[in-house]
Image (cartoon, rainbow over all chains, first blue to last red):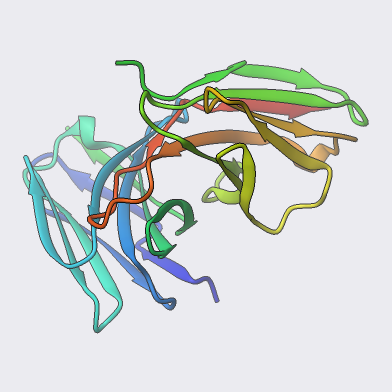
Length: 111
Length: 115
């Protein structure tokens, strides 16, 4: 069993829909990251959280430390949101660089 | 402010050859981590460099080695290339030591194809 599990693996939505991607982990963490990867390969950090909730534009990320679970929500989805969304965790305090990644969720938003 | 830059972006090598990939971290970052991402998979941690030393290492053979220079840039070397080494190699930089944690920045990656 992977230490970081994401669901669903693939997701297709219509433009405007509310989207949720889930992440569960089985290790102790210092922080959880939500990342976005486009087909070209580059990865962009969306959120880093260790507790509670963060919001940036149409994106919302939440984490429940007790349940070892995080969710990424996209409101009013748009075709440009189509990408792979990856959950990753830092397990070492003050060391962001060593991350354990989930398998990613491939999101396609249709116009 | 330039982010993380990697070179080359694409390269093709033959089995048994050696390859060197390069990474310049984001300005002000002193920690560089390298990841291997096979097609359709999530990235796997190779190793991390801080203060010119390998600080953490993932489950990769000794054929994978690296180096960090005084200006914090880094190289990833892979010897005796195997077909299975074909992947996207990602470099990430961060600045440790802050209690609030810190955001990690990734480069665009180097696509390596071994034939």
